[in-house]
Amino acid sequence: MDRLSLRPLEWYNLAKLHGPHHTILREEYYSRGGVALMSVDELEEEPDVLRAPVLKDVRHDLRLLWEHTLTRRHLGRKVLAAWRKQPKAKAAVFLAAMWDARKDVHARVHLLHLCSECLGTAGAGLVRRAWADFDEKRKARALTAERVDKAGPGGKPAMLDDDEVDEDEDEDEDEDEVNDGAMPFGLSLADRGPGIGLLVSASACCLPADESFARVVSEIEREPAGCQHYMLGLLQTLRDRRALAWIETHAQSPVTSVWGSAAAASGLDWSKAVEWLNQGRPMSLVALDALETLVFPFGNPEEDFYGVRLLDPPSRRTLTRVLKAYAARDPVPRVEKAVDFVLSYPDVLLDGKPYQ
Image (cartoon, rainbow, N blue to C red):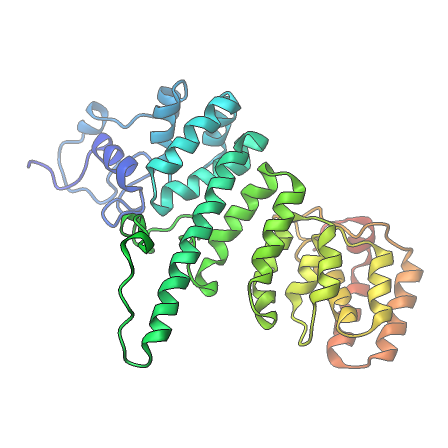
């Protein structure tokens, strides 16, 4: 070996197999093009001799484009634009095959991103397959947990039958190799949030609205009532007005701000906000949190949800009158602080101006 670092093509060939987050391929060692950043080699001309393919070299062929995509740490607009130019039906069939061929987290994160950004309804089959895998992994882990519980303290779980073993379990990569904060499907509630969030995002873009809403609500309702608020970010992703009715029947004290954030993203209008304020707690607190969220962060251009607004907004006089009347009925610091904040930014809440 006459070099201490990989040349761009060598890095590229390894990255498309193992992902660019592999310990020896990461961004602290190599640029996006595979050029060694801390090389002490003297052969400066070799990166030109063994250069890595660039997007224009591969965008004409689905397989080459997919291999190039696997070497990307994050999917930028140029890569997404190249995928959008592919025939959707053909791309969907190809990516579905890649879902079966690649079970590592990095590849599957990219596949779900491509579904969300490029395939539209053509990606419905792939998204349903992803949900099926998610359900299978959850069932396998639930079965394992049940065996451990039956074994008792300090005991060993009973051996699983051959037909109960998840054959794909050992083929998953280490959880440390994660892209865009996504986690492998089927982990505990604390770990699986970002992973299922990406799956829900793909569902919102590719599945019929009724199906995606039913799947998300079912997933949230699997959690104990006191833990459901940890999953409400999924409703924010859907932005489905039917979530308001679900929130009404499930919100409970203590009310955390995520209930309001979910309502704000789900098409909250002023009449519904007033209805909740008049109901009192817990829905009045959900309404206040939703109004705060519509000011910030949803009113902040730095946030992805910029543009989410209060529907059918009232006049400033009506807004002031209703909120001050509620604050007088429920004079606690949380309520007073929220009312003061909302009334300080009426142009953001009512006119859609950016939060500053």
